Amino acid sequence: MDARLPYRMRSIVFIGFMGVGKTTIGELVAKKLLRDFVDIDKEIEKDFHLSIPEIFQTFGEPAFRDKERELIFSVCKRPLQVISLGGGAFLQSAVRQFCLAHCIVFYLDMTWDSWKERINVIVDNRPVLQGRTMEDIEKVFHERKAIYSLHNSKFDIGDWDAEGMAEYIVDTIKLSWDLYD
Image (cartoon, rainbow, N blue to C red):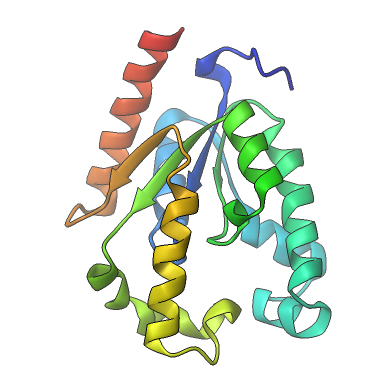
């Protein structure tokens, strides 16, 4: 894909910490913009025919990250996609650089206190959280915020509901299309 692709045609990538709502919001935004939605974690599971915890256990994190990078490069080359990246994908420098050069990168952010209320719902299917204390997880949370700070736009989810967030993000994207095209 040519990095000079019109802004309106660029794929939209959602980044943020695990469990922040990238898939939920991404699906709603894709529907509102009449675009295809791709969840990179789901695509990895399809390729391996295993769940993410099983991939980590069977093949290890490096194999998972290699497949993740390969799929992100492939999907992000296509215009008019809405893509949800796994929470650790943007830690890879090559992924960051590629997404920022070719896509519109939206960072979904939330506070630590809000996020930790969700941990019971997400901990079982997140291998990166296994065997860690809350202090360890909080450290990872804050370390990743620095990486996520490299984006085109940020949305603090606060008390928004999913539908309201998606509507606001779509309005913001449409405004940016008018400004940058």
